Picture 1 (tube, helix red, strand yellow):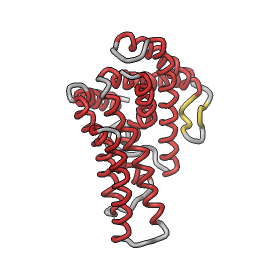
Picture 2 (picture 1 turned 120 degrees about the vertical axis):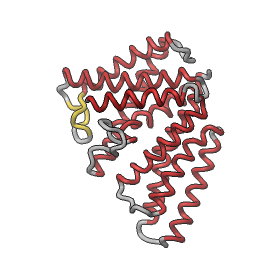
Picture 3 (picture 1 turned 60 degrees about the horizontal axis):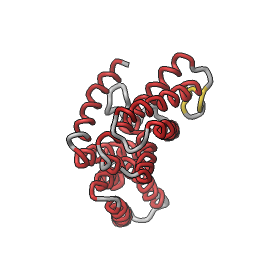
Length: 262
């Protein structure tokens, strides 16, 4: 727990510096780094051969796709298409056709859709201002902390025992309720383009999406037979362990903001 606290004290201020005064450019830099590391961990879960084109090109391109949201929504889609062409051509020239060729290509495409596109949409959210992105980060911190403390205190019934045995229904509901309260309170304190009462429901949706993201990443790790996606953050595991809830909530909140406007 002490290691988790130390790491959080370093990561959170650094992240806030990048997305606050750094604006959309700083946010693009943050997701560029996160997507590269996250994609590296994603490919490692599938035992991708070190030194192969997939292990080198796919993570780098993941970062470029995520950061390209700075130039609008068309840029990442274009890079996704170009990356697929380059990867296919590269594998064909270097490795030739094998039974695993389609699997390798499909795995990279899945990783870009799972890691790059969701993280890149943080740049889109930052375009609505700093406070909506801060609002989302606060909701996720409250959600995670609330589920942990409530689950530790009174958790008795497992939520998804085959995927994440330590998570409980009580913790899940506790995190949901605390997120909804936080949604109302921080919508009054921050300049977000949705009213406090509407923010209660938005926070509820964000919390559910965050839990789905957490379980989805746990499913990937369990399938790979590992406890953490990586070791880059002491006490926290890997990059995917830190951004699993962002992967599902960033697209949801970006969609909500696109409807509401700002």
